Length: 232
Image 1: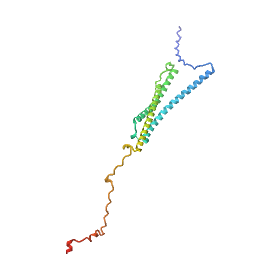
Image 2: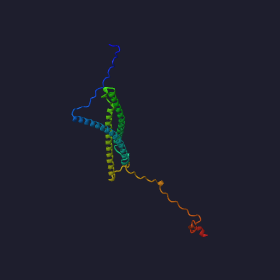
Image 3: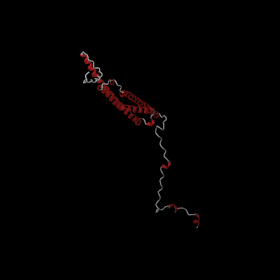
Image 4: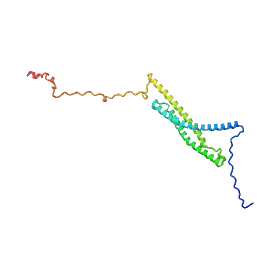
């Protein structure tokens, strides 16, 4: 063995083999595979767009549902006369949960994309075979949160619809009872007129005094004299 002979460095481990696309000899099969890849890419883009629209719809309709329920209590059925308020409160909670979960899923989606980029770097640049199918917990939770927000939205809409129909039916029933001469609840109907207190009534007009220079008592001169003066 020669002294000047240097030891060769260990060869770098080859990157894991990636399955190449299927190459066929038939032009028809090759065209079919090309069309399949194009449609697969378009379908993936459509899925991403639908997911984004779903999140926007949940935020928009949940906020609108809260506003509609408040307008219903203000202009149609007063809060004091409303029934089944438990459904209304539950709907507000479900709307709020749907909004919060959707907003949180946005940030979780960013985390899942960052994790996916890390896996891509490890697999293609650092040749780590275990990164090919590495788990991405953030991405799995994004899918779960979409189901949670959608379920809360459906429950909230159902609660608002049932609450509105129930209260409209009660208001119609009360109006029919009042028109037919039924018993009227003073707490919900028109209040009776308040009685006017006596001390606030109209006072009698004051007597106007006569002037001092006019004959005050003309009838006093015609009055008969006393009996003892006539005898004199």
